[in-house]
Length: 140
Image 1 (cartoon, helix red, strand yellow):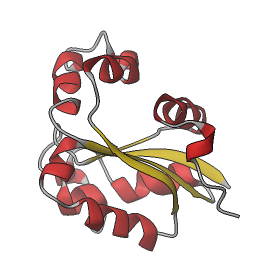
Image 2: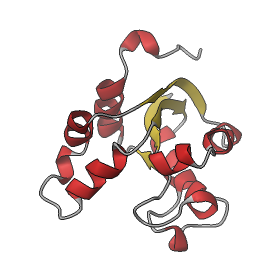
Image 3: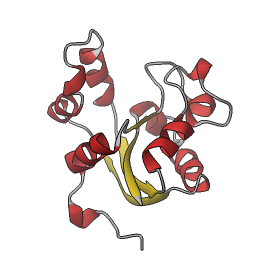
Image 4: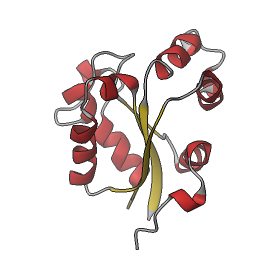
């Protein structure tokens, strides 16, 4: 079993579609083994997105991610990283496959409703950024 990390971003929480997104995740066969609503601080956002610190959108991204509550989750399943990335769809919702989260719910490239880890290595780093080991349920 592999774990991956998910964020339902401020636009998804603000529009009250958290349940719809979680339902799509569960219907895909991934298990939610940890989840919590948080208000990300500027410092958390800057550290989380540090990989993008030299990119022109970094400041705007950090501002957006601190603009309202987010739901952070740990998902588990066979090939969880790739399965969740497939379920999310393309970053640009106009290019996202039908029935993906972003095709259904994203407002724009910037307000694209969800984040997911891009590798197993990054999933471990991202999970540790927001969760302690005791907060993650053993799904077996």
